[in-house]
Image 1: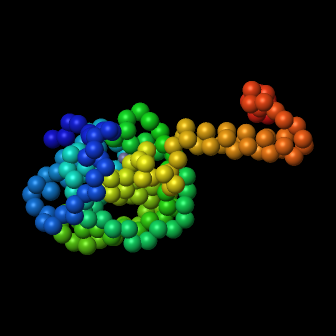
Image 2: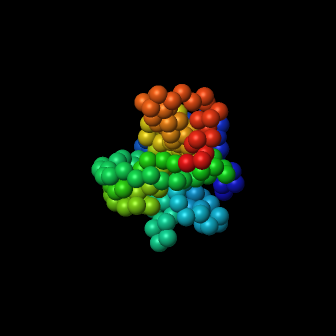
Image 3: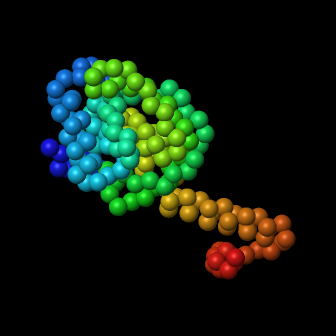
Length: 190
Ligand SMILES: [Zn+2]
C-alpha cells in the first residue's frame, strides 16, 4: 500500500535506478500498488518506482484507456521537440516548463517478462519522457536538466534580460544612455 510519495529534496529521486533482473512477486505487488495509487487518487499520468522509494527501473502510465507497466524501459526513437508545462508528484504545487519530444518510442519488458514497445505522440510522449527521466534521476527542476528544460521563473528572467539587452543595444546605437531605472520603465511601458 502506497501512502507517501517521495518528494524533493529527497536524494533518492536523484539516483540512477537499477535495472530489474527478475520479475518476481515483489515487483508485481509494487506495480499493482502503484496502479492502485494513481487510480485511487484519480491521477492521469505516470509514476516512477523511485517516487515511491524503490530505486529500480520501472514506471507505470495511466492515460485515459492506457494502463501500462514498463520495466527496464529504453528509448528507441525520439522525434521533434515541444514545450511542455508540467507538474510532478515529487515537486508538489509547482509548474515547470520542459522540452519534450513530440513522438517517442520506448522498448520495455511487461510484467509477464515479454518484450514490448509503446509509441507515444503529444501528451503520451511527454508523460513517457518525464517518467523515463525519473529513472535516470532527472527531475523537471533538476540541475542536470538545464539546457533542455527551463522553469517558468528562469524563462521569465531570461526573456526580461533579453528585452533589457535589446533596449540597451538600441540605446547604444542611437547614442542614448539610459540608467537602469529608466530602462525598467521603458520595458514596462512597451
Ligand atoms: Zn514526475
